[in-house]
Amino acid sequence: MNGIRTITLDLDDTLWAIHPVIRRAETRLYEWLGECYPRITQMFEPADIWEVRQRVMETHTHMAHDLTFLRHTVLIEIATAAGYTEFLVDEAFAVFDEVRNDVEMFPEARPALEALAKRYVLIAVTNGNADLARIGIDDLFDGHVSAAMAGAAKPERPIFDVAVAAGGASAAQTLHVGDHPLYDVHGASEAGLRTVWVNRDGAEWPDDYATPDAEVAHVGELEALLGDD
Image (cartoon, rainbow, N blue to C red; front, side, top):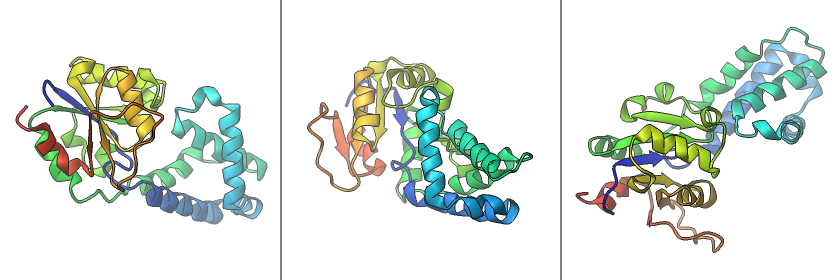
């Protein structure tokens, strides 16, 4: 794979498994709400909060790319419904955010990033709100683009355009690496980037999208894939 100068990397489910992390973060937040604002947990079961979230997403479709905004809005709505007029939403979000950024990276991820960072400009690209400094990998990236920053989420083109600009090379000289066929591979390809699909589970590629330029089982295979380019 020749001519690559910048590598843009998805984070969640590419460098670490995100679903167990989110479950732990939401459980801790719910426990904290029960300790500090007990009327909320008396009124809302976790499933009820999920229904509020769905309603908030439908009401604020123009902000669907900003997960922090959505979670803040949900917290304010359930606190207001429970009769709390003085609710510290930032403090509540911080409880969630602390656990959300306590991730366990896949074992090959950091060594792979360290090797790639010596040869390429690395840009993190995420729809989520991972904090690279708190996770401890900010030293390995030259930039970080989130959906909230770009005003659009993957697979929309604007977030990839922002990532390409951050990397300083052309789209054709930029390789996007990620686990999601639509959000990562299809979105990046439509924006003119080259693509690698991280297929940890040995899934079949969906017929709906053009195939990626390459496929790996994990990011530890990227260095060999890229060769001496």
